[in-house]
Length: 261
Image (tube, rainbow, N blue to C red; front, side, top):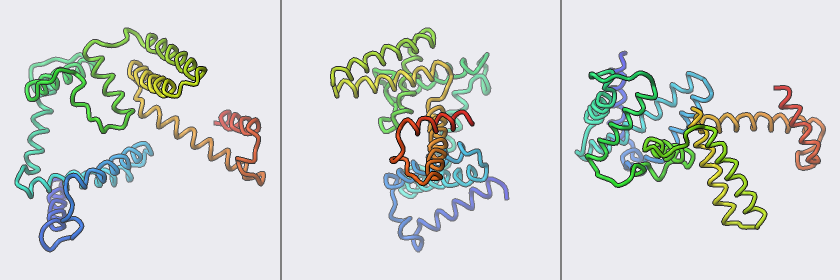
């Protein structure tokens, strides 16, 4: 079965579910009600990619695809657009935004490709919906880490950025000093503000050094979880629970675990 035939078969299953005589639950759903499931599936896909397990990625890609088709079918049923329009729209967009591939444009490297993409996207947005800010259009509902990255990228594209990564690192030190001052003063509102500034600056440091903050944080969490599970196992082997072990002993166990990696 070709990809086109498999996709058409999936459309057939979806329409059977959502048309008269189909599944009551599927027929009751709306685009708004399906968004939460799409988001959940996207996070499950991200987990699968991080695991490196191809079979899991294949399965989760299918789940995400089904959610997309489902939402599209809701609009098609209302006569507002069909999936062919979705495909045409994204195909035309990709061609427009890759003039170095489909036109006479040139791109020496990936950085130039990104600059061209952002310029063309900005021109398209300005023509369709004139707005006063480069930051307009960033979804407010994005997870804060991803939104921080997007805001930093938009500001940098407008020329508002540090000249070198060392400047961002210096800013991080400055924000840390301000956090310490707020902590010393017992300023709760100040603490929240300064921690926010620290996090945003760390995201910008990642951006300026070519590191994905999402990937970096996921890696840090995976390392912590692995070490903590090992710590729990070692403590359990002594017949105790973590809360029964002095912090100094837990620190020593933790360092041994790190050293053994």
